[in-house]
Length: 198
Image (cartoon, rainbow, N blue to C red):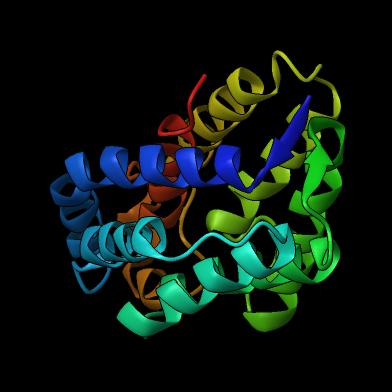
């Protein structure tokens, strides 16, 4: 299955609509452990991305999405999303389509870039853990089942880490009080992935 800029634009628009519906939930989850603006960050970022031009060059399209997040958000989560898009932009520059089978490698490149940009490590109860799980799940899925596998992995990660303390960021200050609570970043990625067209 090939993915071109039109398919990409539809996916981003679908995510934008989905996360807008979940903005209050994400703000509430973030308010328990952070600033309480994560839903606004994610919603505005994807709305801006959906409104951006989507060039035929997939790499340039990804770059436009990165710029969209940078325009509307200076938060750490917005920066990480932009970093992920920039990693994909670098990998896909000059191409007008790519195969679904390349998605795990693109996600892994995004994960590496996000780890290098931030200060978190896998196991710290952050969005990185969710993305790592999605990379593994999509590697073991066919093109037809990749989206479903990603959605399941994102949801499973939220529940797996719910019983663990946050180890980095503002949430780490809550220590054991963060046990039993979903990590806001992980929850946000779950909602983003749920917005993907099946």
